[in-house]
Amino acid sequence: MAAGTGALAFLGAAADVGVSGFWHKRRVFLTGHTGFIGGWLALALAHRGARVTGFALPPPTDPAFYRATALDRMVEGIEGDIRDAAHLARALAAAKPEIVLHLAAQPLVRPAYADPLGTFSTNVMGTANLMQAMRGLDSLRAAVIVTTDKVYDNREWLWGYRENDALGGREPYGASKACAEMVVDAFRDSYFAPREHTVGIATLRAGNVIGGGDFATDRLVPDAVRAFAQQAPLRLRNPKAVRPWQHVMEPVAGLLTLAERLAESPRAYAGPWNLGPAEGEAKPVAWVADRLAELWGEGATWTHALGDEPYEARLLALNSAKAAAALGWSTRWPLDEALAHTVAWYKAHRAGRNDMRGFSLEQIDAHAARH
Image 1: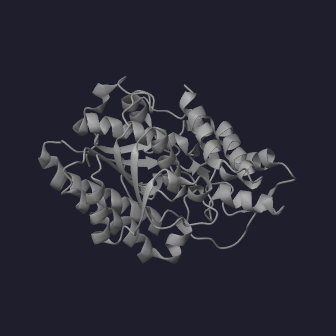
Image 2: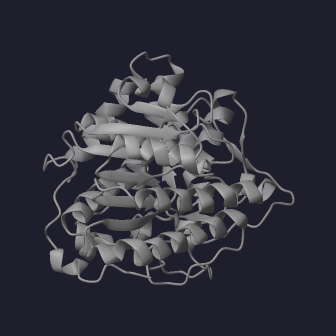
Image 3: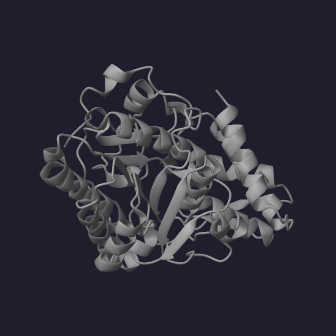
């Protein structure tokens, strides 16, 4: 697996996201722009002047970040399924992007148990379809394929996984994303490396992402918001499970910086990248639930939902030393502050604030201003 050898030679070269003006009028093809992370990324790109073409299914939830922020007015959206190879290839060719950012996926662990074939079809063949479509794209300079922190062969180690640790997957979601990593490696080494490394292709493995605008089921924060709003206790499946929590703007900022470096130095920055919080920021689910309840107020509380549950790792952490050294990246908001921004977003949305786009842009700018 290509590990971006030579990337450390560029230590100190990274600049804050958006400062360089790299994204102004840059043509970007973004899959999954109607989702939670994809929506924040689309808004951040449009805010920096990028010309974004989004390709995705309709928003997977109602409400949704995409609708709450009226992103359809800022992004050219194309409705499509990444499993439809012909439609995807036509949309990509028409957009003539310089940068491709791939976030479209089936992103949830428990639904993957219920529909493993659909999950593998979307996450593996969908990624293969995109890689194939990129082969004939003369305009392309860089691509970042987002996978997950769950791609690793999780041994329940106390230390964080590094990019060169073994991939694996004991459940369908993690396994599908590990397979997607292998698909990217195979296409990069077989079809893009012979171009004398003029196209930079990387994968990004982010820790557990939180933030306003996530309305999915079976995720801690949106489940908490729904329960608290109904004055019901949040039911936790695995309160002792430890995860690398971080605000959505952390991986968004890292992804944009990585894409810039890939476009400038394709060979040096190709390969896999971890983006996760500092070691002390990995916290048990119960700790996060306590803080969410405290921030929400109104008597919010949680309870342990006992019962038979499918396998989920109890301990998972990432080592992001490579990103810190080569990209100058680290999380800017400590977990407690990230949770405060998250709850503030949901409180504003629940109160019926009309300008959730403006509210979200305020958080984007506040994150960019933090050093």
